Length: 270
Image (cartoon, rainbow, N blue to C red; front, side, top):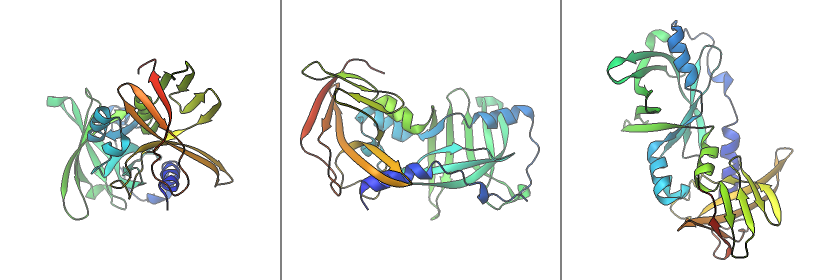
C-alpha cells in the first residue's frame, strides 16, 4: 500500500463518529451547568500534540514533526450526555480511547481535572487518567499509559477549526509569486489557485509505516467518486528561506520527486 492510499484512509477514519461503541447502560453522574459548559467547550476545535506543533514551527515539515509521536492528537465528541474522546495515532488511525464524564475545578492553577471512563466501564468504577485542562493556556496535559505499561506525559494544545486546516494555514496558505511574476494562491480551506489550474488539496500528515524512508513532505489532490479514487495527484514540497519549492508530481508507487516544478516567493505571511 502506498503512502497515497494511507493518506486517504485516515481522512475517512476521522469522519466516522462511532456511536455504537458506548453502552446505553453506562450511568453518568450529574454535572453542574458550569461543568457541562466546560465539557461542551472541549469540542471547540481539535487538540494537537504540542511537541508536534513545536517541531513543525522549527522545521516546516509535518514528516519531521511526526517522528516518535504516537498520540498525534484527539477530538472530543458528544453523544447525548456523553463526551467520547477520539484519539488519533500517527495520523494513521483513530478510535475512541475513553469518555469524559465529569470535571473537577482546581482553583490554584485555574484548571479542570477531567474524570473519565474506559469503554464498558460504569460510573462507579471511573478512574482518573491524570488529564488536566488549563483554561488560560488552552492546553490539556495527559499522563498516558500504553498497553505495555509505559508512562508518557503528553501535552496537547487546542487548534481551530481542526488539525488539517490549522497546519495548512501555518504551512502553505498564502499568496506566492514565481520568477515570471505569476501568482499562486493557497487558501486556508485547502484550495490551490495556480495560473493554469484550480484544485482542492490536502497536506499529507500520515507517513506510517515508512516515516524513516520517506525524505519529503507533500500535498495531494484526491478526487473520489462512488467511494473510489477517480484521480490523484501528489506534489512534494519544501519550505526554505521564505520560499516554497514545489516538485513535479510523483507517479504511483513513488515516494519523492527530485525535479523542481516551481520556486515561489511568499508575498503574504500568516
